[in-house]
Length: 451
Image (cartoon, rainbow, N blue to C red; front, side, top):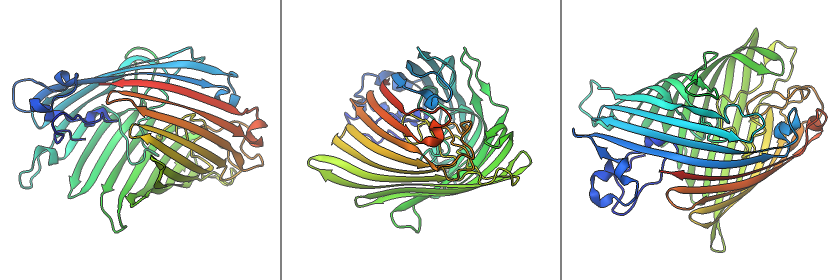
């Protein structure tokens, strides 16, 4: 996110992907207004050569009355998630850059403290950027194709398929290469990576050689659809240790899809659909999914408000004996896919979620949502947020899985401090209670300081 256009006395918000921040606007002393500005832009002599430092401290308390619905697991689990991130961003002229970020993640009091909850000290990101010259007419450095090599976070579109996974604690990163650029107004990104395999110790994370992830993602800011942009993409995944209700095996999954997003007047929309094909062991793979998010903004007294409706369908495997796999695979989505409890994912699911968001002030919003969830087919299992099938649910009668009532409060206290809190109540249906599942209450309280 370019920052150099901000006026005197103002400072831009911090970016969710910290490497997108640009502090060159601080070359003008009149635009320095934040106590951290002295370390955000530190000139190193030659033109366009500077160092920028930043970080985050976050403490988050979570409590589950029944983790994983109690299938299996302890009856209750409450713990404190501690996270410190610190990064250095070195720009050596207009064509070369190095970015490194270290992370410290501890789960105090958690019964089973494994990644992505705990990773005591490790490299969260470490990459170099190189601007590649082209044979066309001379262009500004920022307009040249960018090659990024190393460990990096990636997020595309609405993060339904490729997400950072900010919750619960350790953010997701990938090791590999990414090439991005623009052709006219169209943004293109191609990448070949492996997800980072997290380990709980010190500097012991490594590429996950059991998985490969590659693809190309394009964004069109204007389309033939009025007031809408569009994403078109191909994403490829190979996983040698995939697990579904029909068993384990080597999965090769190819996803081709598109997303339409925009707003006009009081309405906003974000609709996405994709098809998946490939193989799972000796089985052919053919699956599909779609998700919509449509909202209408209005005034409620002096408050801003938005009424929203989300709908999600992810295919399931209709016949475990036909030698094919029809289960939708979410790839690398947000673990908090439907809400912050993160108990269920988008595989073999039909979900309807009305919501109401209230904004008493520009910095405060309160959201109430209610999920109603079914299985797309009863022949397949109920799947968790990390796409693991819950044992004993495949082939059992009853499509209805349960409902989830959620309340979330988000308060941007100032540029640096964010506080958010909420609770989720999950009512499970018979298909889960028959395998020992329980109704679940989830609560969280989080405070973060970013600089």
